[in-house]
Amino acid sequence: MIAAVFTAVLFGCVSQTTVESKLPDQPAASDANFRARIHTERAAEYFKVGNYAVAIDAVQQALAALPGHAPAYNMLGIIQMTLREDDKAAMAFEQATRLAPNDSEILNNYGWFICQRRNARDSLPYFQAALRNPLYVSPERALHNAGVCARKAGDLREAEVNFRAAVQKAPLYAAALVDLADILYGQGRIKDSEALFARYTLLTQAPTIEALILGVRIYRASGDRSAESSYIQQLRRRFPEDPRTREVLEAR
Image 1 (cartoon, one colour):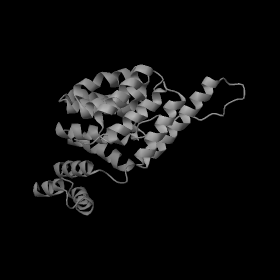
Image 2 (tube, helix red, strand yellow; image 1 turned 180 degrees about the horizontal axis):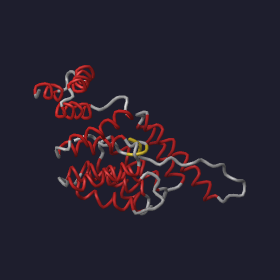
Image 3 (spheres, rainbow, N blue to C red; image 1 turned 180 degrees about the vertical axis):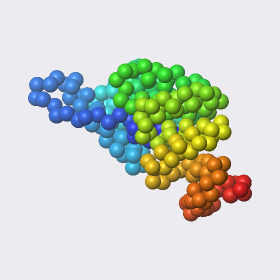
Image 4 (cartoon, one colour; image 1 turned 60 degrees about the vertical axis):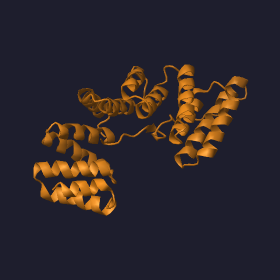
């Protein structure tokens, strides 16, 4: 399976908010919200560079400023999931959803956590709930994650539906393009798969090993030896010790 990306900060997971200056006559509650937002955004930046301890400290400062700040709990869940502190991550995501039950980013992230750490089938309602919000600015991410998780649950038809919807919403969304290409390759629809994969390669400078393997298989099936050889060479150069590279080479 082609790996999916989490969303906004983690493959990008936390929505970035616009920082506004506080007017002098704003009430204290607005000041607390402002400080909570700033600390949560700072946590996201430290998370992106892998400084998890400082990121957690920033989240704690956000919650000290505003204990009911749902984005801070969302960020905390992401960090703890990354650290594989799954019980703590679950509690953080659950608190975030209680505080902001209609927040699409939080629903999407909690769904991804459930898909990866618990049961893929149980995650799907969270993506569906995220998509019900007409103001969700990046529905392609929830659609793609729903496709990945439906596939993980063994529902290839639902996976294809969601990947297609993601591509329709965002034609340049590389992760959905390659996963849809993989689904179609598995169905023997080589030409359609090849067309989608070609679009993916135009958008991606460093394809994953899964994508490179898919490229080898697509062009091997279509009889394009030159393209097949190109992807084999990339596998040998970038992933020489990975057993999946050897497996593809031995399948020739």
